[in-house]
Image 1: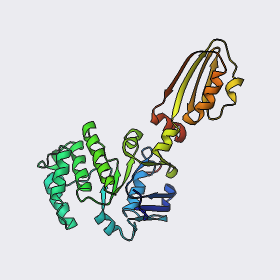
Image 2: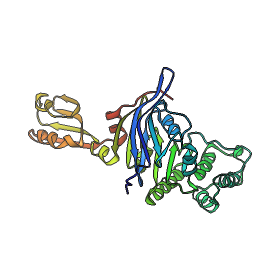
Image 3: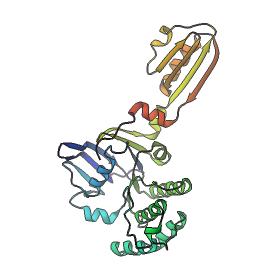
Image 4: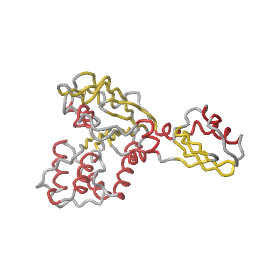
Length: 304
């Protein structure tokens, strides 16, 4: 489901701290019913983007709207309507999970207790312990419950599965899919492709404060790399394969050919292989993370 009104829209969004560019000219759109994975290495500018959207910091230039509201001017209304989970769970150490829920219900002026209790049960969360006694994973569960319990139209989540064990992560991903099934949207920031590829419909790749790519997951998978090994009855020359487009890491050693190629290049490669007498042939699809890093690189630590 895609809405006519973008739930999140940024145009030329930038943030500088003196001479340091934390974010530069980021333009993106997130529609209803989708999970948008915001990927990049730690320090690439992901958290800066989310804080700008939530009106916690003011943009140096550019604009951002959330639910049709100005991210800076209308931040109070945005906070009321958006489920936000920051990178480090900020809880009151002396309050239990149950007390956190009551407090947040009071702040919102809505009774979301029943929804919160259902979420806590699904995440296997004990609500009767003080936050200061909880592990990082259980503190994160409380933060997840607080973000989701009001069933907001939009969720903005910064590294939401930090500290969660694999079974709880699966349940959390199911909750996100249920959320988008009702027409809601999710902006999920992560530095782990493996997590994002399980749930996201589209991904944006940010590096050094710049949005360098936006793609649908299905398109990235169509670019998926394949590792090719072919053994021939007689030596072949590099000239025979040198003209093939998009083939990477080509090595010819006597009768043995090894290379890497995206799915789109396989047909031409196979036709060329078939022109020679083949003894053995192997084609194995690479992990999506390898494909991702090949196209977009690992990046490095830059802005906060």
